[in-house]
Length: 181
Image (tube, rainbow, N blue to C red; front, side, top):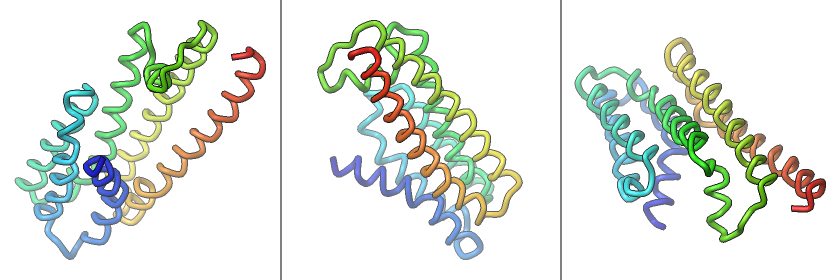
């Protein structure tokens, strides 16, 4: 639980720390923050292929930042996270149980076929979100200022995620009402 809280805190504060450290701290030293974020994810490696790819990618970005002493590898971390999430969600669409259904089943519920189809559609929507979010994070990393990159990856992307969660919740309530699920 403590590691999860630390992972969340590091992930949320990462863009702000990179922005504040830019020009004051060499990128190779800022890379230690990304290394810390990767280390906090180690307990989840046995649970998720996406987590394994995310940690491996983060370590590669750390190595690139240390070797080159450039900020760009550190700015690519949110792109990597979106790509790992996209990979996990998209892969689940090739299996009988989508990622959203797998998460919903953690509460021990069983779902009828219409609900399973709905959750598969929600998984596709999240895939679309991760594509757009990753592309936007990449664009800001390559062509925008550190302030714009930090604003998008540290505030706007989380706000968009919250809007998507909220919208899906409202659609789910309507779906349950219409399908008596």
